[in-house]
Length: 607
Ligand code: F6R
Image (cartoon, rainbow, N blue to C red; front, side):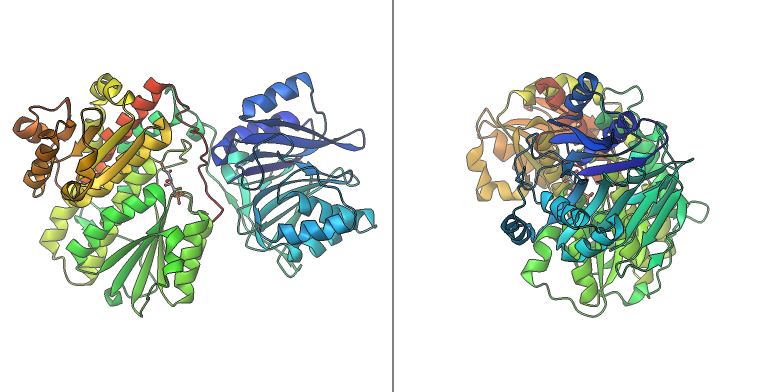
């Protein structure tokens, strides 16, 4: 969740560390800090709140030095105050940490008993004291780190600075990602390649349990048993341009607008248009033997999984379960031979999803991973990697990753259907043609941006909003509600339209706008009946449908949003656009921080 970066460099590092933090702020923005060695001492600058506060602090109190570490925090232990901000330091050692040290209480008690005094409420500070204690007793930084790492339970990525070794940093990872960047006479540590994008493209990904000593001349990597290891250096391909806002006011808007291109990019690697066939990487297991699919994910990725359940069942006739990852392990799920787990994750690092993946693997399941970061932990641990090609998603609210996930999952469901003998060549051809229409349909949906902006004020005044949908558009209702609540802070709920009459309809009055997602198709009539039940009770409805749907049922609505008419298979992708744009414009109308909504972080690497 937190973002970390370290530089052993040639010139002053503070400015470049802050530049790196800018690219990591999506991982948390409760506080930020830097430490460097200056005049033989460790010095820190830290500030509560967004990075801009740290920048101000550095302007009035600059921090020279050629070796330094920096951190942007998503608070877990201890309030988001300056004293809890990283780096945490003693006279000898400063460090930044991403993850949770689960046994920190016992370690803190042990250290306190030995007379160590703590300056924060964080779990991280124990690591600084443990390492410092050994260094103070004469241990080398390497020996100190090697002795301390096995004592830490939980998850961590660490970057550690030593007063006595000013041209070196030590990094370590277990459960939280950490990369090494190789520059020209400089070496870097970072939570991801994105943080290091302006500095270098040459990246080595540390493996679980690895630790690393970096100097200007390069890196020495050790595995969990302290044996020297080589990790391949790859070219990250992440450029500064990919992670700029372009002409858009917010990353979220830029990413919404990128959808036609990135969905096309994604589909290109899963469809063979000449032959009108789906074409997926061939796994090292026989897809035809898969008897059950278990989909596990969190948040927006979970809603993509809910849509995919319909496809796996309808197209492949394979039973499919969908679970929220944080609940999965704890309900002792029954996993039989022939089961395939599909994890879906933009980041590929979400701790809940990763834990579910590992649990399923230990129960003998095959694992497929639909992830947007092909170098992520989930990507590396899966038997079958199905990348989405959405490019870096910076806005905290997920948008383009979702539509790309849907594109991959639809192709995968078709592939499974073919492997199961449920999809003949003619049906496959038709399906591929519908999928190939998605980018143009997404483009057409974006054309309604201005009309959505114009009606956003109707929603911005509401305290509660309901979203309704049926079939594969029901998860879209859930996604619409999630988008609205996370960026505009308006309470919103999504319901299966037919479920309203079983309780939630009691909420209806003229102050609760109800957004109805009802594309023309087999479920249109039934959804409209549920919508009319709402209207009959004074409910104010916004209908999102295509031209025919709006003509048939738009009367009496407070607003209608017209989408292009599309095949039901791609409707969930296309209808994602209006729900994203609506949430976006409502948030802008309310003046909330669209790209960095309160209390959230983009990459959730704690359970
Ligand atoms: C909502 C959102 C989150 C993520 C969730 C899973 O807009 O972004 O709900 O979808 O935290 O993250 P990933 O997909 O990285 O596993």
